[in-house]
Length: 91
Figure 1 (cartoon, helix red, strand yellow):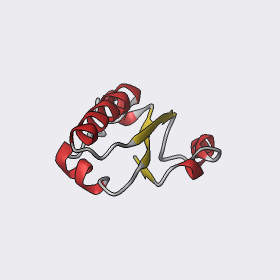
Figure 2 (tube, one colour; figure 1 turned 90 degrees about the horizontal axis):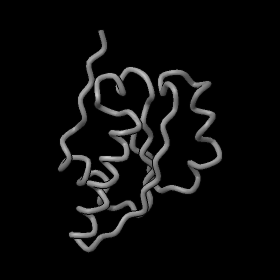
Figure 3 (cartoon, helix red, strand yellow; figure 1 turned 135 degrees about the vertical axis):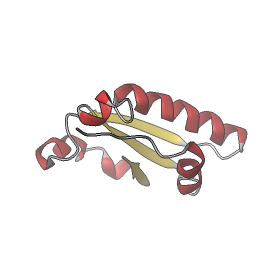
Figure 4 (cartoon, one colour; figure 1 turned 180 degrees about the vertical axis):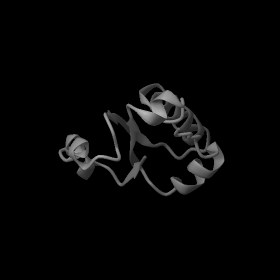
């Protein structure tokens, strides 16, 4: 059985504070089932980060992408054309 949970929001916010463009990549299998990192969770986290950064007067541009499985290299090819547009990738 796989169990996952999201890092605390304040930790994520602190780690990303110096980046202006961030791609948040979710996974469509295990962590989606755990409600810790699927497509819905990526969208929720992006909304939280966007709001927090606006309140801190430090706006951020966030992208969102969910791949079938991040643990399998063949599914990561879907990111090849977009990763260069971002300062950081959050998985």
